[in-house]
Length: 270
Image (tube, rainbow, N blue to C red; front, side, top):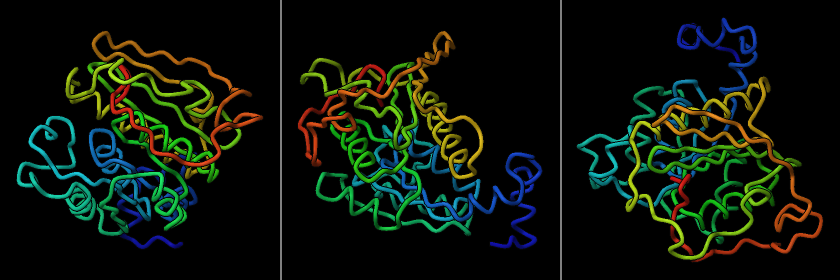
């Protein structure tokens, strides 16, 4: 993929990076990334991936823009209230970078459609920007089954956490196993979230995506990055692939995708 003069100028700050260069930018432009959730995490991730020139960005979300979203979901503007989030996000992406192909899926990610969506464009990397436990475990399980790398992210109050899964390394269930019981933890609408936290974590997820596409740098595999912005405290916890993991272990007990019922967020989830 040859870059024209305008693209050479647009991506010049990438190109002058020794570890990116023309070759890395070409890989970014050939990349296909699926963002599940066009909300707090998906919004900043989508903007930075579009700015970086990712060739194809898929957006999955069945919701419409609500006034309460605007405090953190920076890809949506006040006139977008009531508009489908995937349409609102697509409009901003194309305004930022018309070279990007945007594929929209205005549907709720479920066990009966997630594999179809991921396979639709054979996406290279998945970003989990969902806001509930059933969706997060579903994204994990689907990526494990399909051998697709993905970035997990979650936020609540002043806290954020993220990790990157690649085949053969620890997955989300290796660490968290199964969902907590119903009402064991508050939802985000109950507990609140500082808007800027979404930007902090969403941009980390975008950075992980770009590193993966370029094939350089150290990903957050087998590591859980946790931060509290109130104290501005960051720490990384090393994790291991669990041989007893119910989905990627030696004797998995989860062998097909299912829709689970629990609808609450973890204290470190979005």
